[in-house]
Amino acid sequence: MKHTITLIPGDGIGPEIVAATVRVVEATGVDIEWETQILGAQAFEQVGTTLPDVTIESIRKNKVALKGPQMTPVGKGFTSVNVGLRKALDLYANVRPIKAMPNVKCRYPELDLVIVRENTEDLYAGLEHVVVPGVVESLKIITEKASTRIAKYAFEYARDNGRKKVTAVHKANIMKLSDGLFLDCFYNVAKEFPEIEADDKIIDNCCMQLVMRPEQFDVLVLENLYGDIVSDLCAGLIGGLGLAPGANIGELGAVFEAVHGSAPDIAGQGIANPTALILSAIQMLLHIGERGAAERLDRALLAVFADGEHITRDLGGTAKTNEFARAIEEKIVAERSAAA
Image (cartoon, rainbow, N blue to C red):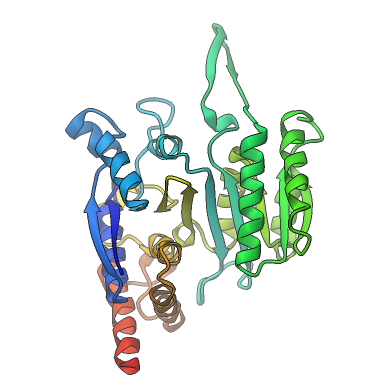
């Protein structure tokens, strides 16, 4: 089956890691036609907007996009392109698998859990205004619809992927109405999945438990802001954001991306680590029904890490981006030749 997928190179190191990822995806033999579009700073320079309609329509039409990292100014300039894209396409579920890689020094080499983050509301709605000079109010929006939808996604994900437990993370002891609504929706949905254990943790306790005993968790479902923070915390447990994939899922489409930044300080040097985007591409291949290609790419990636001969500089190796990609490609080709 042939797939048409929107490809967004991104800013900074984006084009380099996207090119490496496309290379290893194509090595699996999957039939993909890439439709290249732009977002963010590059789009603003060329067409005067960070979210061109043509890019949004391309994703709506193709239903799937693979995206490199985007630059977001801090405290000034244009608003987050990632947040804008999620709103425009109603990509309500952010899915972040957290799994340790071979030969990467980290605190928890056996860690394997999944973060499911609500992606459309909470403080990330960006509803802020100045009350009086020196006083700013930011509104936290929690709805029954979004809370129920993300809880259902988390339980369905657990069921479909052989997971045994879903934990809701909240601060309902203090924010009794907003986080209380989120928690009520979670337990209402849990009744529909009696085969899956359901529990909850207060956000501050959850963070402590993740650092001390992360093996107790399986799937975590969180509001937007908590999910943003906890997913990065968990990435730190396995070696950093360079090893953390991300998917943004909605009814109108799905965008798969590296969750790290655009790293402009090393852009163009050919030393960026494409692992996070490659892992995201594996999620993408599963999403479009190409399980065989996804498994081939996953085995090859794990084998390169296990060998330890072609690891990028950020992980203590000397391999450049293209050398790392070539090593993965060679393992895929060798496996396909052996199976022929």
